Image (tube, rainbow, N blue to C red; front, side, top):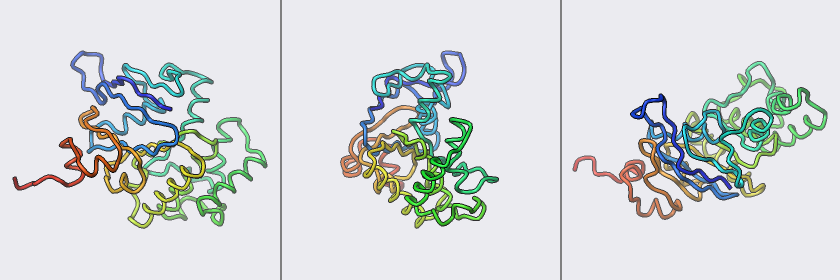
Length: 249
């Protein structure tokens, strides 16, 4: 379980420095598919970068199975990041490496080598995402949807407990978006991995998420099950995202 408690992230040491996150508290249960949604500048990407400690929060706690991870360094930080995989908007594949080598890269980064067992596991993951036949291709030879499926296989290489998706489908066409979302839902159901979806699209949340948190100006303004929030949004931000606003009023 991930418990985010009173998390703040500011840029600058002055008391009036701008806050990207302002007293954010969220509980994410094991096995959940949680949507974190908001308009541009709401703090979504900052939050996900704090969860995997690519950015350090200014204050507050991130508890993972009861352990505050915000102070981790060195080997402990590397071990934590293997538990928390990341899928990026721009896929993040290494252009000079084949699809198979990209999926094997986490093993290389962790141990300095890739074993025959690692390659066998990577091929299994490529088969899972429907890309085994492209193992020897390079990213430039793939469509955006195919690249994102490879990125998902790579994210699964170290058998993470959590997958963070930062606008993972925003660069894809509708058909590719549906394929990737179905794949993430399948992985969640079959492995129990917790999926955290950062997005500005209520359509993405509706298709894959069980629960949703709405951010606005770095603060949580609404939370609940997807069904409840979609049926009766309470915050102005959620109403705008759901296009439930009378723009001519």
